[in-house]
Image (cartoon, rainbow, N blue to C red; front, side, top):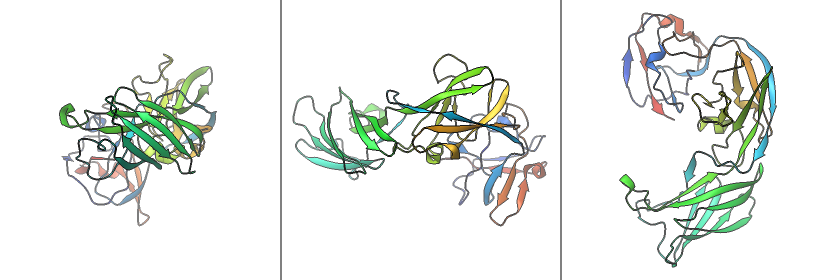
Length: 301
């Protein structure tokens, strides 16, 4: 699904496209686009929508699975100097932050290395732990969505090409999950707290593919097309749906799936007509671009 980002200065011109039939764009031009990248013509567009009719809304009850390691995390930021090979020298302490948590790391003199950690959350609660290169540690921190588990690991070869340099990684050990039930079809649906802040909201969708659905029925999420962004159309039980990112409850207790008439993009098929509202209120229609050169700008987001 093509998505329009908020556009300011264009950061890089990667390709000028001569349109090819249809509405002027072809999915072959965007097949290799990462789910974290967006497409934008050189326009100050504020809103993008695809013509279509939204149908039934299905609310899915979710519960927190506190034993579900996330597939991505964040590096704890200990500030400058960031080119240091170690986070701290033996006996020394450095203070860092990650996702609203303050982390005080004191280097151990023990041959096993590692750090004694003092973790302080937004509610003032302090948790102690020890992490070594050989032993990641699991901690529980009280967050807005409840008492949530996180995993801290210490990588001592985080430099270029695996060269020596320490990095401490913070990942979630939880996700919200439930059952998508449409007609006679059932599938596991999961939502990840991509920002790791203990709140489930739209920001998680902005951070990446926050939703996973077991579309192939193998009992796990990880197959082709099973990770989704908010608003991305997917096919299930012979019908088309998208996940409404604004429906996600902050405690991860529910989310809404919306049936839609919008077709899921297919490789080689013409892009459906896109409607965009500019900042001055005008409406742009991609069908009017046929026969014109369109600038596509790709950037990491």
